[in-house]
Length: 176
Image (cartoon, rainbow, N blue to C red; front, side, top):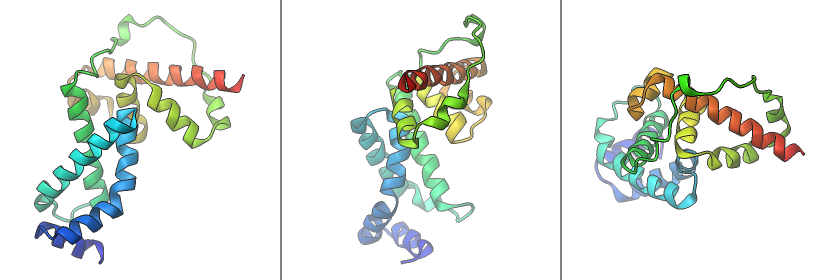
């Protein structure tokens, strides 16, 4: 079934179409969930909740933009809501309170695989990981991140900067 027919069938609550949609997108959406969750159990919770939201709000999809992009936004928002609810994003530090540090050398990233990098990102503290994913992977601005997470723009910038520095440190440790 092509994507438009699949969406229409899901809008009509066709269980077979919903299963097909799930099977078509679960793997991609799980990778989104894993980036925000940091562990598989939490990611599976995000995935389940995200698909519930997709199926309950699919009527609002109006075929503007890609369907996958529409779904991805639902999964990102689902993860962010859960992280906010559990107050996992509150360990931020204002940029003004950070100690000056030398500029990091990011060339070490070229020496590790994408899977290794994703594993390192998953180990970041929740606030760092969330901001890093939103800014570096999803393409949100610091203003958008601040609004979504109910933090200041400077906190978003500092969490992103600290996430990059921590990743750089871990990457250098892997090389040794």
